[in-house]
Amino acid sequence: MPFEYSIDGLASRSDLPKDEDDEEDEDGDEPKADDGTKPNDVFICEGTQVRYGVKAAWVAARGG
Image 1 (tube, rainbow, N blue to C red):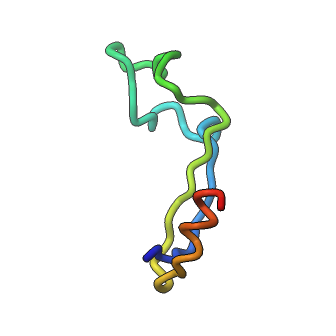
Image 2: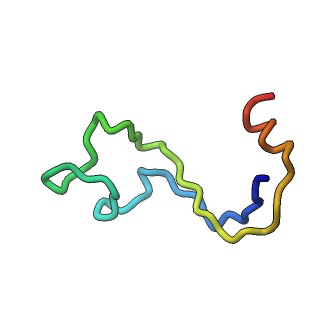
């Protein structure tokens, strides 16, 4: 059963301060170019659990 959560905020990777990157290369600099991240990646900052969701959400999330 999926859960419903409130959303506390949204941020794109380009919004993040440079010193808070979670994955750094050996020199402590920017993430490696081949790590799969992009400046327009979006972070959905989870709030609190509101309630149990409905099973139909899984069907919709899977495209059908």
